Image 1: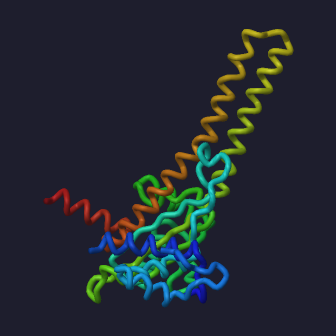
Image 2 (image 1 turned 30 degrees about the vertical axis):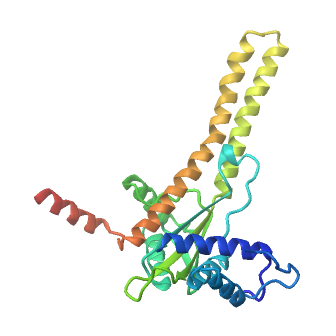
Amino acid sequence: MPDRLDRDDVSRILARAHEIETRHASGEGLDDETGVEPEALIAAADEVGIDPNAVRDSLAIDRLALESPDARRLDRLAGPNVVVVEREVPLHVADAITELETWLTAVHRLVCDRRTDAGLHARPRTDTSARVGRTIAGWRGDGRLAGVSSLDIEAVPQVVGSSPDRPRTLVRIRADRHDARTVRLAGGGTVGLAGAGAGAATLAGNMVIVAPVVALPLMMGGYLVARSGRGHADRLELELERLITRVARGERPEGLLGRTVRRARRSVS
């Protein structure tokens, strides 16, 4: 745990602890310079009726390094640089990280680096077989993490609502799509500027009626190219949610033989 917590930390952690406790069943007088020890915060929460384990869970979540970045200009148009999803899974931390690594390597063809017991860093493989495999997986509706430059995962155990037989782990995934966003913005800007330039050229040639016919389609095309980044971010978020759902359900990646056998059984039944 951190040595001291400032006023904002206390407010955020207590609010989340109360949310955790509610799902599963104040900052006055704080000195911003000296802060509050985590154990003192847990004790204070207990005195006002908040489950101490909920506060511990909230402190654990607050220690996660992966966070959503602040909104940037053009995010509404091309989507954010980084997509972050967070879910609970009924697994121990080590098991959750292991299962996610299995899916990322087998289906999404990523190279994974297990940096800590509760953390994972992954990047897309660039070899030809990996590219072909991702394409085939995409045709089947799997492996749709195209445009991700890197992916980081963190997991922390949760106490409230868990038991030895039914553990709870909060998983947070952060996907960097900076390159995909930049390509779409640059492409859209290029097409849009070409349209504006064509319109200006026709106006210079005294072709006033022709100018909108030439310029508007290109400018609209440029907007649509840039706007496609928003759709890519939404699809990426959905794919990350699907990934965590599959891990939570205990699903395992299937090879070509496994899918063939399953389809044959369905056809027989």
